[in-house]
Image (cartoon, rainbow, N blue to C red; front, side, top):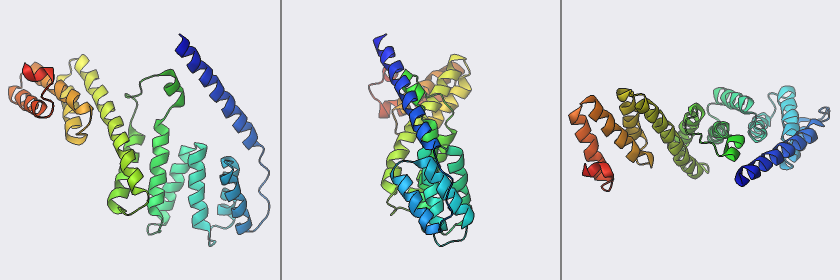
Length: 254
């Protein structure tokens, strides 16, 4: 009870801080009539100070007023970052897609892919559920899959990128997230005695997410399902894989 009270207090505090932040950033003056460079300097100052909504307004004005200027590409790159920091995933994804479509040979494409991955990762995070201690492993992983694709692309196409190392680390975390999702689906089918579907989900985990903490449980599910289906050869094969990788598993001795 005490832990839940603390979580509720934290949630209230977060809501209060969010409200204060929103109030401050609503007080944005109309973008003045300045040169592109002067406005860009103002936008950078806003970004440095964490005033992301104000930066978005200024950068959007530059992008609209000076679409073909010498700093147009940098304006769009900064705008992508501002959308990410402000939590506007829809606008951030739309702008990254547009940038990639219109600038297929730009020198900073690795950054654009990286930012699109970060935006998709952010959509998977839910502060309120985290505070309440709710398991999120069964949530739709579409955004996580898209992030995984972009991070993998960075590693394969831009191995020397300064974002490559972090991309590898983030891929490991996403890999675990996706494996947990598939495992939750496999368990769902198992409870409903949909053994073929459950076994196929387990097989998918073994094939695409090994090694991972979920692999052992996936093999267990496959063995149980093949046993129920009377598929002896597949059961024996799955058990051999389990024994080779997890010799102390209780099913190995049976």
